[in-house]
Amino acid sequence: MKNIYLNKKNYSIIHYGLNIKNFRNFKFRDLLALKRKLHIEKNTKLIGCVARHEKQKKLDMLIRAFAKTIKDNPDINLKLIIVGRGSLTKYLKNLAKRLMINKKIIWVFYTKKINLYFKLFNVFCLTSKYEGFGLVLLEALAFGLPIVATKSGSIPEIIKNKKNGYLVNRNDYINLSYRIKDCLRLHKSNNFKNKQIKFLNKNFSTIKVFLKTNKVYKTYIN
Image (cartoon, rainbow, N blue to C red):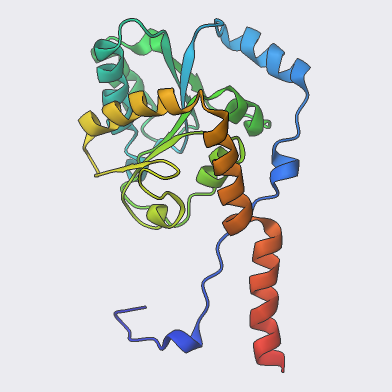
């Protein structure tokens, strides 16, 4: 918009919204069944990511950061869950094997109940090279998750560094690893979880989207 010199009076930005109540609705027996299916032990800390296995998503950066996190924190039982698939699946699995962490990664290629995975996660990561608007970030906020994401695209419109998560530079897997450790501490705080959900309600609820959209229609109809 800056490049074509659009007048700010001539456009409005309306983000996606998320129905928090609906998204957080699940049955605990389904959650317990999923834990058994994935062989999740009680003391395991789960790093989560939901993304296609494509260059845009830079999942190799996440895998390298996860390997470093394991190496630097041998006292923490860590696992990485990656939900998604794509043209780089084989490459990413081979990378995990080379880094000797393949047994620490759970690959989930498809699920109809993505909200159960967000409930399982202790930390959520999104490492995109570029991103339009990451709906998965709103889904992570709905469960009060600490988030680490790359400083790219529209991600900083959702994640405010050191307020509701951490932003790292693209390809900086070392800093990503450090921030994952920071987020593991945040996850224990109910106060932080409440702040995440409050932030989501204030900025990205379906009601908020409706009011903004309705305002645009009224402006031009009247």
